[in-house]
Image (cartoon, rainbow, N blue to C red; front, side, top):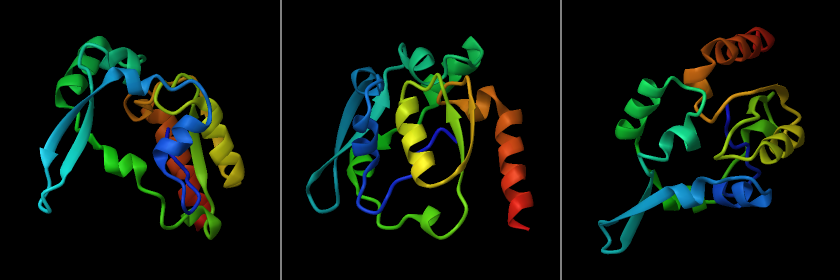
Length: 149
């Protein structure tokens, strides 16, 4: 669902950068904090004024504004961490590709879905597809459940 389908050793950041089109980087602001081992950790937030266009352009304005102020940050390390496993190599994969996603470029989503031989549905939606298109999300999940039985 507007998500990464990495191969072992790939990171989300590498997959985002593999194809042009993501505008996430310039819209984020870092927040650093100390880790237990004394190192610095960094989390990224989407700037609240840019959040609606970047993340939730097809969500009602009031909802997108609420999402902006309640967003959870992503640890930079999580974006850089290589995948240790790839479930799609042993189980069927399904992908909801979001054509208007400004975080994960559509070409990157297509590449990952095709490589995983995922049953894919492509719709005009932002990265916040679970909010803007809950029917399409539920339909794909139910299709996956039916096919696994």
